[in-house]
Length: 61
Image (cartoon, rainbow, N blue to C red; front, side):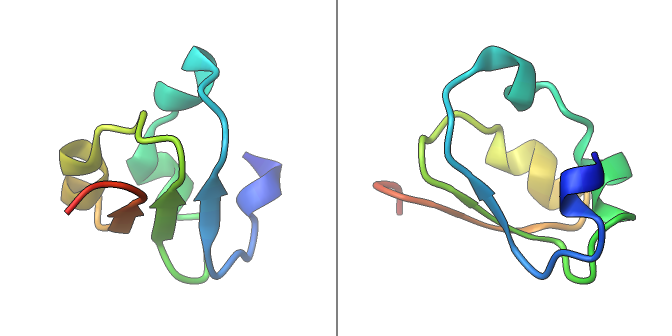
């Protein structure tokens, strides 16, 4: 959680399952701007968008 404090952009670069279960609503409150790039395609982008995030996933439309 502390890694996103004041962040302008979150880069999701791992396939480790524990990171896919992070609560995006809770995480969004700690960022300057809730934007995430999912470089591994493991995040549930619908869930993240519902939590107010702008999402981009590499290799997806």
